Each structure stands twice: as C-alpha cells, then as structure tokens.
Length: 135
Ligand SMILES: NC(=O)c1ccc[n+]([C@@H]2O[C@H](COP(=O)([O-])OP(=O)(O)OC[C@H]3O[C@@H](n4cnc5c(N)ncnc54)[C@H](O)[C@@H]3O)[C@@H](O)[C@H]2O)c1
Image (tube, rainbow, N blue to C red; front, side):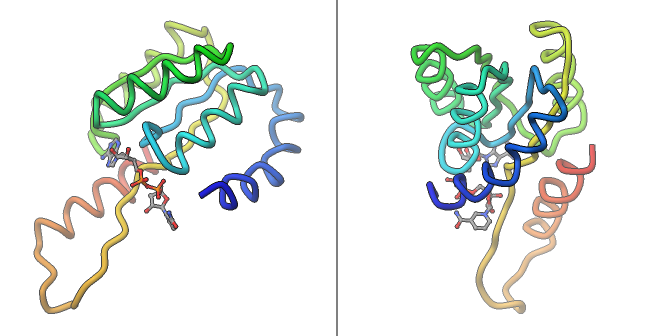
C-alpha cells in the first residue's frame, strides 16, 4: 500500500506544482490507498473532500488528517452514484471555493470463474469503475 502511494506521489509531485492545486476529492479514501493519497495531499496543504461509503471509516480518516493539521471534510456515500458525485463536487466548491483535482480511487477488483459471474456483479463493477471515474 505504502509502495503504491509512494510511486503515485513521485509522479504527482510535478503535476501538483504546476497546477497550484488547492482542493481535491478522493473517493474510497476511508482506508487503504485512497487514505494514503489523502494524507499525502493534506500534508502538502491541499484541502480534502474525503469520500467513503463506510461512515465510520470516512469519519475516522478525516479526524486523523485534521488532527495532523490538514483540512478535511468527510462525505459518506456511493461513488458510483451520479447524483452523489455531483454532491462531492458541490461540497468542494462550498467548503473550499475551488476543485482542482479528483481522484477516482474507489473501485472493484473481482476474482473468480467467468462462469460464476452474475449480471448484478457486472453492473456494480461497471457503475463504480467506469461511471464513477467518468463522471
Ligand atoms: N491494493 C492493491 O494492491 C490494488 C491493486 C490494484 C488496484 N487496486 C485498486 O485501488 C483501489 C483502492 O484499493 P485499496 O486496496 O486501497 O482498497 P481498500 O479495499 O483497502 O479500500 C477501498 C475503500 O473504498 C471504499 N469503497 C468501496 N466501494 C465504494 C464506493 N462505491 N463508494 C465509496 N467508497 C467505496 C471502501 O469502503 C474502502 O474504505 C481500488 O479501486 C482497488 O481495486 C488496488
């Protein structure tokens, strides 16, 4: 996890310098890679809208970032839901007046046999991995 986050930041460093990034949305950031990204961005002075569908994870992740001196707002919801994605954007504008970066980190990786795959599982994968990233 930390390795992936470190690799990500080697590459994003240049990007954030040039973009003068002030605020960012990160989906699925209550734990794991998304949380590491949120922490790293907050340490660089970037205001964070931290999303997770798990309320406890979102709340405690944001508390940790704010306790370390960052500016983080938690927004609980499903990152594959179009109207919720709009709420994320509106929340960034409301709290920070700008939105410069969106990281569609929440995603589904599935394993198993092709023959066992259900249409419902496929729909939720497309909704989060494609729609959630596109919109
Ligand atoms: N960990 C890896 O080695 C690895 C490798 C390749 C890709 N990925 C991808 O990177 C992303 C993050 O991986 P991770 O290991 O940190 O995952 P994780 O399971 O540790 O954390 C994912 C977080 O996203 C939240 N989440 C799940 N669905 C959501 C939704 N619809 N809306 C909002 N929040 C949601 C979960 O509650 C959880 O807190 C995932 O898309 C994963 O598929 C991970």
